[in-house]
Length: 446
Ligand code: SF4
Image (cartoon, rainbow, N blue to C red; front, side):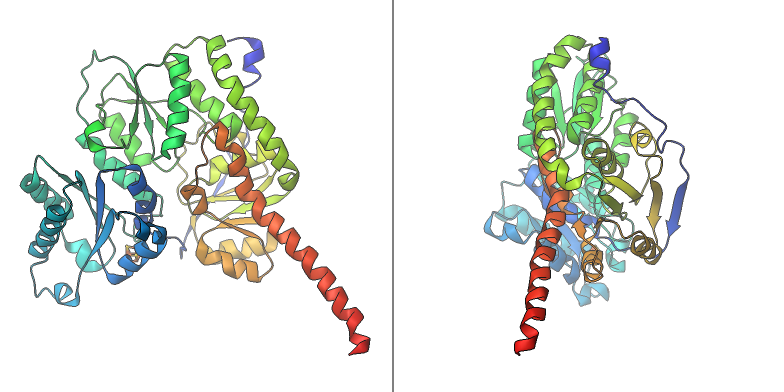
C-alpha cells in the first residue's frame, strides 16, 4: 500500500473499543420485525410476504406500507379470526386454503414467506412445518419459507435478518474449487447495489452476487470460496448462517459516508488481491464527490450534539459517520444489540467521550436525554412526538432504513436526513420569535 493511500483509510484511535457499555433491560419502544416487509418486498421482485397474524398486524403493515396500495401488492395478512384463536377451526387447514387461493390467483409468485407474529395462537402454530408442507405441495413452482417478525423477540430491523437467514439454507452449495465470489449481504436499493457492482467490476472482481437476490432463481451459491461484505449492521444471524456454510465475512466499516464506503470497498479489494493503485483510481472520483457534497451539509451539523435511542441497530456506524465526517458530537449511542464482532472497526472510531448503551429501558433513556438536552435525538416514532413537545428536536430512525443511504453518492443524502430537522427547528424559531415580538408590540393597541 502506498503511504499516500494509507492516509485515506481510518486508523483506530482507541475511541470506544474498550469503553464500558451501559446494559439496560426494561420497557421498549420499537416497531416489530414485520416492518421489514416494507423494503424487502421492493427488493425481491417475485416474493410475497404473507403475515400470519392479527388485525393489528394487518393495520401495521398496511399503514407502514400505505404507499404501496397503488402498486401490485406483494404482501398480505392471513388474519387469525377469533374462532381460529378459540381452536374451533384447524388453523393449518385454513392457512393451506389461504395459500392455495393466493398462489392460484398469482402465478407470478415464486417465493412465499409465511411471516410469524406475536399473538399467542400464532406462536403456537408451527410455521416452519407449514412452510415445508406447502413448499412440497407447490413445488417446483413456488418455494415457501418462514421467519418470525414478532415484536416480542425483535427490533424492527431484525425482520430483515430473520428473512435473509431463512434464505441461506436455500442457497446451493458451491464446491471447494469454485471460482472465488463476492457476496453483498443486505437489501440495498437496486440503484445502490448497481453502483457497488460497477465499482467492483472496475476493480476487476468478476463474480459479485447479492443476498437477497432480486429473483429467487438468481439466489447465489455459497461455499468456502465465498467472501461476503455485510451492508447492514443488523444482519448477525444471516452472517452466522453464511459462515456455517463456509463463507468468510470481510471485516470492514459499514458503507456510510465517504470513509465507511472506502473502507468497505477496500476490504473486498484486499480479499481479491486488487492492486492498491487500481483500487485508489476506482474509488477516488466517488470519494471526492461524496466529500465535496458533505462539505455543503457540514455547517448545519458541525458541533451539534446527538443522542441515539436504541432502535434501528444502525446507531454505531451512523454516529461514527456523523462525528468523523460532519463534526457532530455523539453524547449517547444506544443500540438494541451491540454486535462487537461486526462493529470491531467502528467502535474505535467513536469519540471516547461517547456513552454506549445496549438494550432499552425507555424511561431511563428519556431521563438521560432530557438531562443532556442534545441538539438532535434519533428515536422511534413513538418517542419523537413527546420529545418534540418538550422542545427537543428529533429524527425518526425508521427513515434511515427506508431511504437509500449507502455508498458515495448517497453520503450527502444521509447527512441531509440529520440536517433537515435542525434546519426546520431553526426556521420555526425564526418564525416564532418575530411573531412573539409582533404580539408584544401589538399589545398596547389592543
Ligand atoms: S407482530 Fe406483534 S407487535 Fe407486530 S403488529 Fe403484530 S401483534 Fe403488533
